[in-house]
Image (cartoon, rainbow, N blue to C red; front, side, top):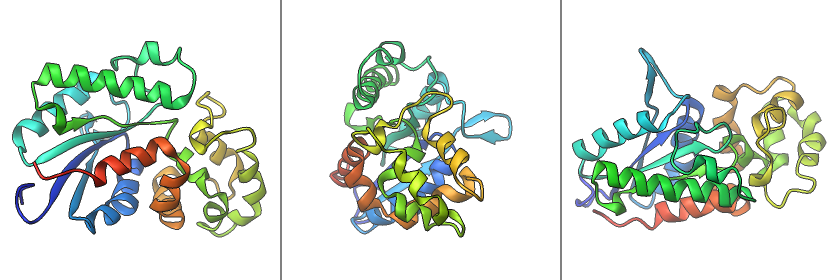
Amino acid sequence: MTAKSSHGVVVTVIAEGVSDEEFLKRVVAPTLHARQIYLKPLTIETSPGHSGGAVSYDRLKFNARNILRQRPDTYLTTFLDLYALDTSFPGAHEAFALNGPARKAGHIEARLHESLVSEIGCRPDRFFAHVQPYELEGLFFSNTTAMSEAVPGWQACAAQLQAQLAGCETPEHLNGRPMTHPSQRLADILVPRYQKRSHAPLIGERIGLQAIAASCPHFGAWVSRLTALEPL
């Protein structure tokens, strides 16, 4: 299958972890598939026999070079968390001094694109970065009622989940400090306890891509960019 054929557009996504990969496969990919845009999420090897997590700029660059050289039919993008992002990424140190999660993420995305395209030598339009403020779980606060309905027993936590958004402009503004980043909030509130790998895709499916994108503007802009891609 090639992006120039009638089969549509192919997009490889380097995801931070396994739960991010499953979220992309089960929540984002089906909507794009209907538009003949085929999302191919993957995690990269971070140690022998293990993939996902601990993504550094060098690991990303190595895998991006291989993907773009071996698959001329594909675009490449990322789905990385702003929270605890490795400081080896271009622009990371300057970004954390900026105000607002979208400004932080956008600065890193721009610098990452500039650096990676320059070092790999690929066509600039074939790679675009996405860094999610602050992490995947922040997206789930776009509809706390639907999130509380994803797993039996969670409905008792609905009010606590909604209360987390007090004072937040969007779900993407839920902060990224060690004890209050979105996934930590879920782990502290939800009973049965939130399990990232099994629960993240379930929550995403329950809420739906359209509702998430509408409430989370940085993520929504990335989805819009994906849907607007033309064949290479």
